[in-house]
Image (cartoon, rainbow over all chains, first blue to last red; front, side, top):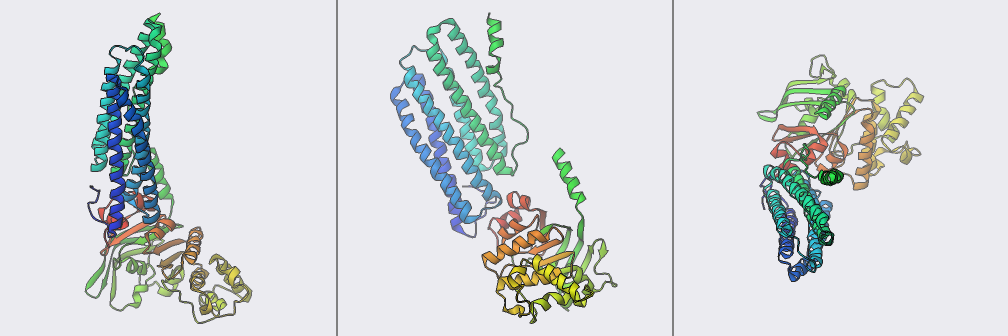
Length: 245
Length: 265
């Protein structure tokens, strides 16, 4: 595992501890990526069994988060890390929290997929959600890659890609609203699909937060400029309605 | 950007106590300090850290001309205390050391009573007009040394009979008694247990209300705990000098990073 200085500690056990927390975090990241992919796939193919494995798999992610957090606490208490070592421990802790939340969203998607499988399909929705999930999945993979490489430029790029996810969410939001207005029988399915889209949009925010942390890890400073946000639409519902009327 | 400007203004307002420029120190042929430039602020604790033999103690000893006592030692460059050259020929090193006190690694009380340990400096510098003045100075200094309550009933007993931690606080009280402007501390806690160390650190924190304190320490945690400014020395160079919190979270020089994270000795 690469480090900022690429030098070994005099105490080799310190290196082993630092490597261990990062390896656990990457394992967690792998599981979370898989959960996102599987939940989106289960939604698209209306596969209840696959959704079930996502729900059950979340326990493992939660357990890993607890373990990695405890290991970070232990490392801070026993080794008093400074500078890049301290930033590594703190970033691992925060990133683990973000990953755990993304895992929860995937689990929630899986739950709703099971409900949705009994409802009539909404045309095009599952495909659009799957594309959105794919984008978040790629962002997460890049954010974790940036973590390992201490690559602030890549992390910054990930931060900006969240705008696309927000825009995809906004488009879906409008679409679901239209479907519900067209036929009230769509409301139940559209509500679930909307929550799924919102979950993925929130997952994107957590990935962005991971990318923020990676910038801090690599440079010692949190990114200064606020990242662009594209989620103003939910507050414009009334405007939308008016134009429809 | 705005924060930066305000921060700079704040630093400007803090007085520079010591100004060192292009300081070189030689022991015979070998150079122990190379081109050190540093401003040490008033009412601030400054920590010098670095591996053994990096020059931090040598530089500290330049600040009150303790190196004068070593015949083969030669100091070049400019060191100013309140903008006065301390190496100017008219400066009396003894008077300088009254303004710039020092506490050493091992507690070294005089083989005298607790009272006389404190009273010695004020007596030779004529700081007390009478016995009652001197009593006040002794009490005040021992209070500042956080030792008064423990020794007030046995001021006549020898200072050497105190515990290690008490002896070190006695030495700090003794250094404070001459009302110095700067206190230099060379590893003041290395011979102390954690409780006595905590007491001395608490004391250092109080002292900075009135003095500029410069502390050499091998314990990076101690530097992080007590200082506001940290200077990292390596192989006779002052590698990095800055705010302590910055040095310990995000140092600029890779050598500082390596040292404080335990990668080079």
